[in-house]
Image 1 (spheres, rainbow, N blue to C red):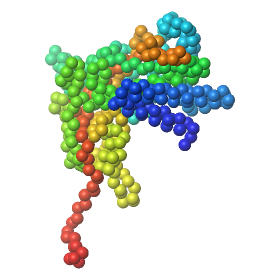
Image 2: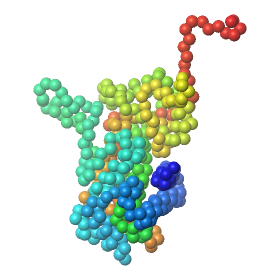
Image 3: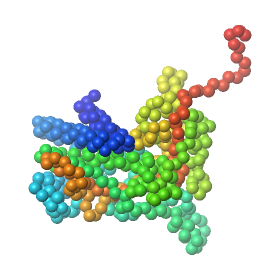
Image 4: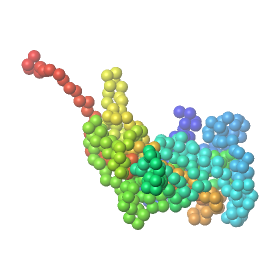
Length: 399
């Protein structure tokens, strides 16, 4: 494996560990996982810096994900480095907005983070993911309503058409990531500081977003695929009932997918782009044995009865899976005009570190209740290929 491949693998390992402990770990485990995650990124950044100092080859930086900064980004990072080295950091960062043209972290930094998120994370790449920048509300089509009609327009029809759209408040859900910046990183310059901040943001936000998309309860966070869209109690949306499945055959899966052909109003709709989401352990111990068979040439292939792609997510609980039309799950992420980055004293660290809180806002929910079904896969059996025989087959004794 290449040097770059080893680095990527290590970062993925610590990011996966962080997601696991965030799901079920205690405070001490979460803190330790975060420290390991941060240290892995710091180690990689410093290694890249040392190699660049020796070679001066910018192509190496580009291959490893470092960007050519815009003038606004370079100006911002230089001012951030300057402010971070001052004695009164909080005041320095507060006045940072007066020192930059756009008065906050350039939006191109955050947009690049989300672009990388979509490219590198299968689940995030499949949902309807949109950056809404500074918008405070977003509008999306409610497929349970009729959005076009034939004939003359009257008041009743106008009401029906306008009700075909739902409005979601972007600013109601805050997604904050804490970036602990060691003083040593500040000395490496804007390009490497940008690489560090984007790496921290990318994996921290990915963990939080994936968790929310799968099972967010809607209270201060998106409504996850595993939650009902109605009947919230004190703002908390309840779990969907899990449907027990013992096989992924035509009859079993056909019956499940048929539920998805109706929207909340009972109207017919097409089913396309199905995805099965489960955690890695359940995939290898339950799902793969239930769908993987050996073909005539001896190769093993996945034999789903209907076209379906598998996405691994550690946010899915053990023994459960989700079948979803992910294109019907909307995620909108934006920023505040008041600023994206601020100094934070919520967490106390060593003197040689600076802690910043990077703020974004977001919403997420499926368009329709039946866009996702929750399955209980704990009883899945191994795949069996049925064989039909025409005529009479003689046994050994009869022959």
